[in-house]
Image 1 (tube, rainbow, N blue to C red):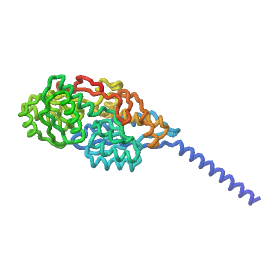
Image 2 (image 1 turned 180 degrees about the vertical axis):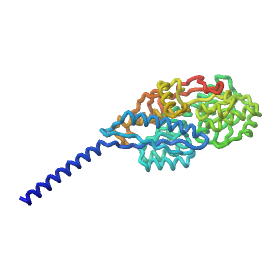
Image 3 (image 1 turned 90 degrees about the vertical axis):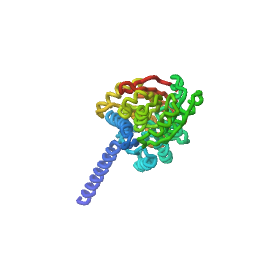
Image 4 (image 1 turned 60 degrees about the vertical axis):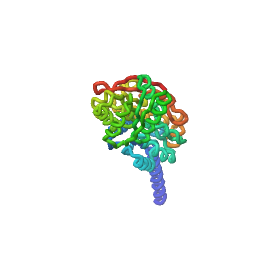
Length: 384
């Protein structure tokens, strides 16, 4: 009897242990799965304010999605945003990209600059990870043959010509061009120059500076002697602001034309009264023209205690576009997310997003702005 009792007790213990293991396995299956998403932009340096705006937009989307609850393939998902600083530097960008790959992110929202997005894109492509840039506008970014590159803004091949067409429409017949030697600034300036010449406008000079420059008086003095109707500046607001300010100080009469890198609320602080002489483009719809802008601006202000600088709504929608692909793939596997991306048709804050075979928007929009009393003011919209 004693032996039988021992056997019975052992059986009961084994059954109990098996039950505990089953419950533990079931509980583990129901536990949240953490899914990492990368976010890369310059968080230090002269355009850190634009980078932080970008990251804030992505973070707001991640926090909202987690608060609502996300289930993919029967698994509860918690998104984790891994925000990293590439300092707007191409070499740093590739190092950061490799870190995100090593950290097993399923996709990346970024980078901000064309000059960092392009070199980083090969690393993401080699890893089979989706990259959605909320800001990179150089056409070359999506022309490398990679299946992983996407963007939610128009390109410089659209933005440059829109600025040139504006110059023609305003009777600006002679033009000087200055770029900051970056992939973005140089690419935008080149696209502008091609279109300007095609329209019969006279390009009197094309000079180069760099994205760290603070003194433009030598170039501007030379341009003053050329007496153009307008100067097209390819670069960011950290250099574009001082450029416009020094042009005014030197008494240049020329209008300053610039792209989306200059077209920020910050420009009036950087250029002072000279911002009134600037007309700039934005590779996307104006905030007031975006379908979901009012609600987004309110949420952003409440969460971060400041207004939107520029790219936040594009980064915000990029996260939702990524999650939409996860849902359609019913998976968080990077390869399956990538396979779902081409069929994207998402309606968000910035409007409807659909992609062509290269990962560019099918219907790009260019917005033109001026500055009045220190405020960025919408002028016109060009649909491409």
